[in-house]
Amino acid sequence: MHPKLGTPPVPSAHPHLASDVQQVVWDWNGTLLDDHEHCVQIMNGLLREHGLSELDVARYRSVFDFPVRRYYERLGFSLDEDRWQALAARFIGEYDRGVRSCKLHAGAAEILSNLAGRGVRNTILSAARRASVEDLLGHYGVREYFEDVVGLDDHYAAGKTDLGVEWLKGVIAPLESVLLVGDTVHDFEVAEAMGIRCVLVAAGHHARERLERCGCPVVSNLSDLFE
Image (cartoon, rainbow, N blue to C red; front, top):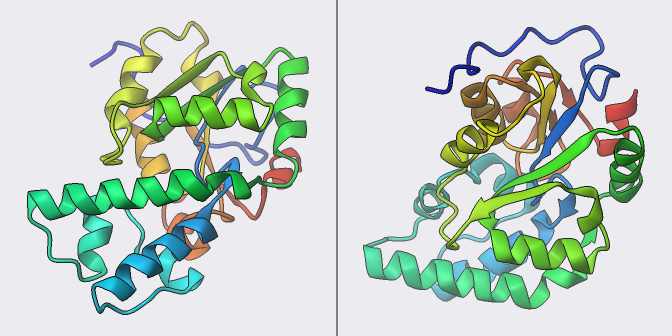
């Protein structure tokens, strides 16, 4: 275990993007990029093809999970390894074809610019393919705000805990000044493993009630980070 890792500090009464934050670790999908409805539409096409019940946004936010294979199983897909790989490839192909119709969450670019102007370092930590995230950051004109983009080499979205812990080994800032901002329970789990603070945004891939069970601060949208 990295010697800096430990128990996350107890959040203060005003824990969001406070003046003591020197480094923000951002999730990408659902946190900065508003793509959850795009994901629902693609999955509903797969569900229809397999004779399975379709999703609405509320159900999606209640069942989506990491590793993503577990989410497919919850939806009723019978998965051997070949079928899982085929479905994952089909999903990501459809996702990539339509993702540029999605938008960043309101205020995302302004928040990133504000933080960079204050000297706060920004990093992306994603369970998506790094190359895909890099491409989209350029497309949305926000790549310049990030020092690091940390992601996976494949499209199976198994999780990002190990990525986060390994990345943290190169961070100079004290742990108590590092904040992870995400939109799923997995993001909280990653922050715990890294030993850093976490704020969750209830505008992405998980329902607010799931996020609130984590016990960390939960905000309704990105602008609330500056409350």
